Image (cartoon, rainbow, N blue to C red; front, side, top):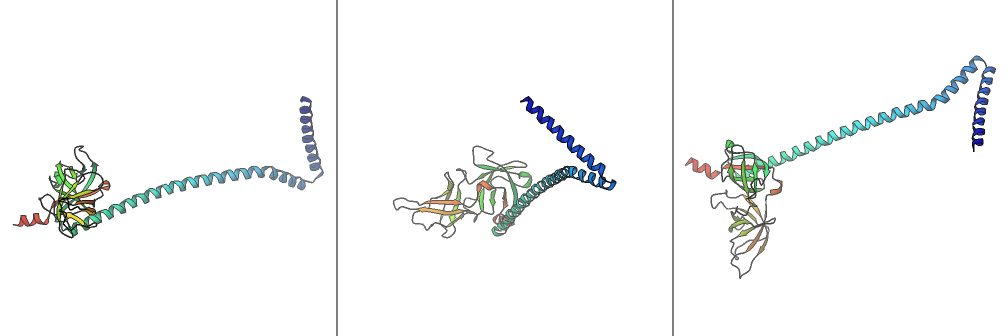
Amino acid sequence: MSRLTFWTERSRRLIVLSCAVIISTVLLSMGHSQKAFVVRALTISILAPVQKGISLASQFWDVYFQNRSLRQLNTELSLENQMLREAQLENLRLRQLLSFRERQKLTSILLAEVIAREPARQMNSILIGSGSHLGVKQNMSVVTSQGLVGRVVEVYPSTAIVQVLLDRNCPVSAMVQRSRVSGILVYEGGASFRLKNVPWRMDVVAGDMVISSGLGGVFPKGLQLGRVGQVFSNERELFKEIVVQPSVDFNSLEEVFVILNTPQDTEEGEK
């Protein structure tokens, strides 16, 4: 094995030496201009791959940094688009709230941000970022453009706790908007309400809108509560069993309106 290696190394040296002798002989036999041409040709042949490699490396880094810059720009544009989309949705919500104010003819309402959910564990509630400094008082109604949310139960200088309708201890005097049938809207768990105390002969059908009746003096009249989903009646029972799907999406509350006064309040003040 060592002998083979020896002969291989010796042959390589002989080949290199022979090539060098041949090149030298050729150069000696040439004129000055021919020698310069051959040297340039050899130089180009040797350096061309190196130059090509350097060029490819340079192009690679250029592409790398361009891709990096494009990725950064794409991320910035994506974030900007997300913020613009959120601003657009917020603008739409506020426009709906203002439209609701005009439809309900409420004389004074306060826009408040929902800053926490269920701060008090004994009730189903939300915390809003407006309090007594802005005129919020206990028992004021809280709404969105979709309908009634609940009522203020505790007030602090800059915040207030709102008991929402999804609390079992927050019943609402209600009526069916179409037939004017009265009842009490209560929450008994799950994703829907029950309209109670409606006699089995009364005219209530699926699809009817249920609104606040104004009785009891807690909530203003005419606020949307939900739509009748199912009606069960039995002649043996005194009252219908009426399932109502809420108008308000309580899981996505971000801004609400506190009703500071109503047209009835204004009339009483004028008297």
